Structures are given as structure tokens and as C-alpha cells.
Image (cartoon, rainbow, N blue to C red):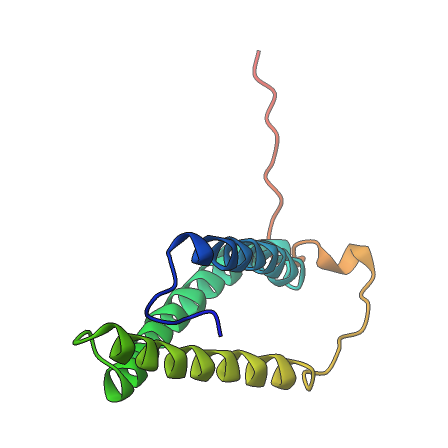
Length: 132
């Protein structure tokens, strides 16, 4: 196991970099998928909802994992810190695995012709006015 009271910080740099790269490879394409699934006039709302859900998920994730950590470990000693960190990491990994498995149950959507992605007919296109 990588976490132990005597593990130097430099040994944790590569896993943290890997986690950061993984998150960057996930969040940017997710925003693209969400915005491509709505009409042009709904992109602002979809972007706002995506950001809100991501932030709320982060807040609840930190709160739940901190609760798990404090129930099992503490800051009293290096070994109790590692004990709490190990359980919290496993719980977090389990939640991510459940999310990945449940995402496979989401039904796919049919391809839509490119014309139907444009703004609905009720939304008027801006009029161009010649000046001068």
C-alpha cells in the first residue's frame, strides 16, 4: 500500500498528478457532451446546471469523505491519520465505481439531424440593419 506513516511526500506526487490529469480528461469532455445535447438557446442553462451539479457533488463528496475519515481516523498520530485516509479513499473509490456502473445503464439517444439542433422557430433571429 502506498499510504503509510513513513511515506515521503515525493512518493505521493505521481499519484496526485495522475489524479489531476484524469479529472482534466473527464470534466472538459463532459461539458462538451452536455452542451451538444441541448438546443443552442438552452446552452446557458445547461452550462449553469452542469457547473452547479459539479460543485454540489464536490461539496457533498468532501463532507462525506471527511465524515468517514473522522469516524475511523484522526490527526492524533500518523498511523490513525493513515487509517482514516485509507478507509475514506476506499469509500470514495467505491462511490466512483458505482457511479461508473450506473452510468452504463443510461440509455443512449438517437442521432438527431443537424438542423434540429438550431434554435427553435419561436426564437427570432436577430435582424441586421444597414446603417449609412
